Image (tube, rainbow, N blue to C red; front, side, top):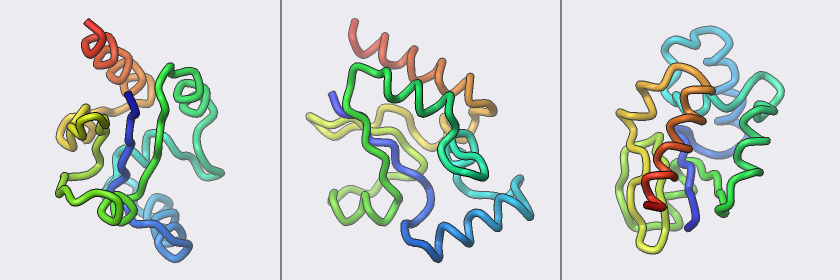
Length: 117
């Protein structure tokens, strides 16, 4: 199984700088909860990187525009999807309700456990 983490943000340097500024000035209104939870000021959080690196599945991170270029499928973001077949693993309302990185990790682990039973 491959996990696709799709951010509710577009790719590119200009977008990254605008997102960074938005998180700095008004983090409570930033649109990508997945970004807020997994990224700090200097990049991907160490705890998150260690978690995804230890997963027994291939993990791919995509921005919203990158996902749309690769897949002809409209999905609300942020989202976590699986491939073979392409399906929603964690939907936007679920991800948007997560408040901490620890909670996100526990949620992914619980869903992976369910998927394997």
